[in-house]
Length: 232
Image (cartoon, rainbow, N blue to C red):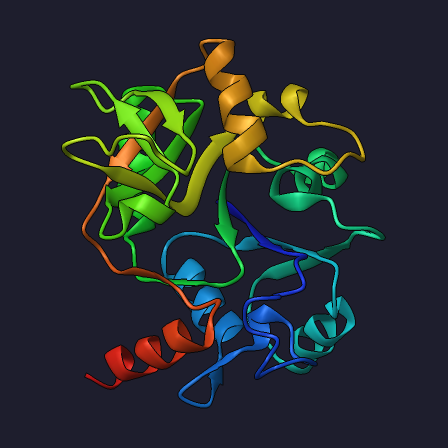
C-alpha cells in the first residue's frame, strides 16, 4: 500500500513555540512526529510513502536521509502553497491504485488494515475516517446515511448542530479514479473543494466511523495534551 503525507503548510498555529521546525518534526516526548507516523504506516501494510512538503521541506528531507526506515520514502516539494488537495496534483503520476492520505500534524493509532477492508467492502472511491465530534461548533461536519455513505459536508460556522455530529478525522483512503478531479497548480483543499466536487458528481464517499485514537497536535495546547496521553 501507498501513503501520502500532506505537510506543506507553515504550521501557523504552532509557530509561536517552534518557528523553525516543520510540523512533521514536532517532537512528542523527544521523538519527532514523522517517526511515529512512518512506523505506524509500516506496521499497517504501507511500504511506499510520499511526503508532500513545502515550508521547511529541506529539514524534513535531511531528517529522512539521516534515518533508515526500511521502506520507500519520496518527497514532493511545492514552490508555492497549494493546499491539501492542490499538493496531490503534483504527484498524480506517482499514485498507485489505492493510497492513504494523512495530514502532517495529526497523531493516530487507527488500524489502517481494517479501514482498507471497509473501503473494499463498500467499493468506495474515497473512504474518510470520521468520529463523533466533541467540538462540533468549530468543526466541519458530515452527514451520512445508514450505510455510512457520506451525503453532505457541513462547513463551519453552523446555524444548527446535527443531533449526532460527526467530523472528518484528517485521514483518507482513495483510489486513483479521483485524479481527474485534481486542480492543476491552483490552491485547493480536500474538505472544502475536492470532496464536495466528488459528491456533486455522485462519486461514492464513505465514512469509516471509528473511536480509535486520532489527535491534531497543531497547536501548543494540543501538543502538550498529546504528550501527556502518550505517557499513560
